[in-house]
Length: 425
Image 1 (spheres, rainbow, N blue to C red):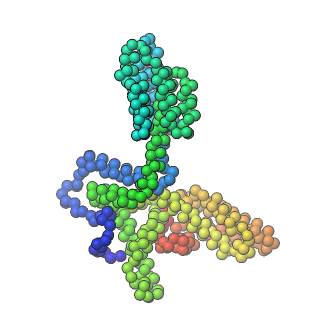
Image 2 (image 1 turned 60 degrees about the vertical axis):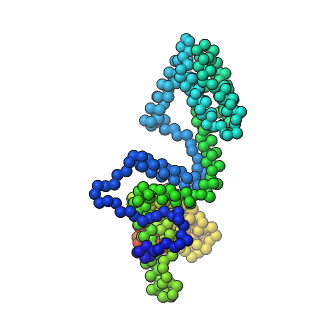
Image 3 (image 1 turned 120 degrees about the vertical axis):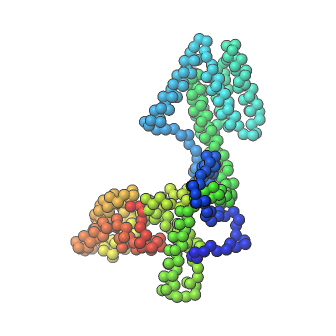
């Protein structure tokens, strides 16, 4: 890849992020105002949210509740209990004190209004009429407030607005008689209904976001670059490293078979493919992860773990075939059975080197047992002890990054250079 920047074509997209670095003044370090930092944070948050909605079909919001045994959970429980106990005490006074109850009714009204659609004109008008806060205050002053009547109307309105999945919870509200417990459950179910509405909106917007996703993300990245010119430095370094590797591979290929087609410039698609393959083998301790793909790091890490599992499986199968192949590998179903055993024994062991070592030691014994059973089932000759010991030793050595068999499997399976270290174990 050439070092200098090529001149842009006239027909190139105008909404591509500009990766050109801006020169900073050489005196004091650049400072940013609080408002600009908040704007940048909101931009990144919106970008992450839109990206997740587009890629994850099952994306949804869930009400957040801290674990009960955590400090946050215990504090939350204490505060909530104190609030509802205070409300209970106010309602038990003679005459009852409805000051907190009125505030809660106002919040319930606001939550119900947020669930209404533009077409709910009649329901909105009825809600304003029944939950008229000025009228409710006058009823309190004259001792004529019927809290159960209002709660019944609220429950019926919730039943008309909720999704079918919430029908059982709304029915439970009809059987509650204690006003404090009823109000507490109304707030809980309304919170669930708001989450349902948000998730419904997300699913409705998803087809439109799919059409605009690329342009939207480009615009957001450009907005981030305008405020933080160095925010894609790691992405630039990642692509440059992939371009250098691809250029070296092209030169090596042209040296082996010199032809006019092999001496051209590197392909942008090939560079991008190589760059993404590097992500599947990324060192977990390397903090310079490309900023442009940080939103997908969790997905890429899962794919990388699966890739490393497949490479280990391929390495074990290759070693077993070399030492004990022949008759057993020609048996119907043997390779599938062996592969399932390898997968089960290696599952969850790639993240720590010590775990992988132990799993590979046990795997060697299991592989030999399966091979021995297959040989005896066919009435063949037992595998020589020397071959058994050699196979166990070779399998136990697969934990090493530079293991020749593992390197060969990686090179054939991914196209990565043999010296590229796996970052998963």
